[in-house]
Length: 189
Image (tube, rainbow, N blue to C red):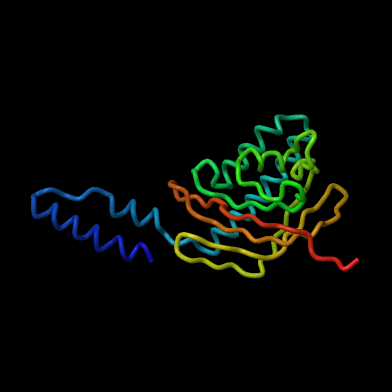
């Protein structure tokens, strides 16, 4: 929707420049790229890459590598914290510190922090993450997906988790998570 608003303004600016004997730059092309609608395929690719990142953090931990660096890279790649955007993050295994609005709180959840409830979700390790979207809504430069994802442990057992993820574009056009809510399914027992 923003694209339709921006293009007339760009066209008017180009006409004004032409009247002055100047030419427009590639700003129209850059604006179109920056506000390109998020597609269902992009959401699916972002989900797949996020899952692979979680698996990688566990592998780095198991191999004795720099797990903190791996987790920091994952958070920077997939979450909008470093872009100065608000991130609403409610992880699955969090009761005392339910919401993780900062980079450091997300890092603690993924790799653990001694003396807290965080045991390191991503260092379990997991061998696979499989997504089943119940639905995905795209709205121009944002998207939301909801469904179940399954985390496979080293014994081949799956843990089912319910999720809602929200996505926005960063300045380079990459999808970043600005909403992550996940929880274990309700059990009456």
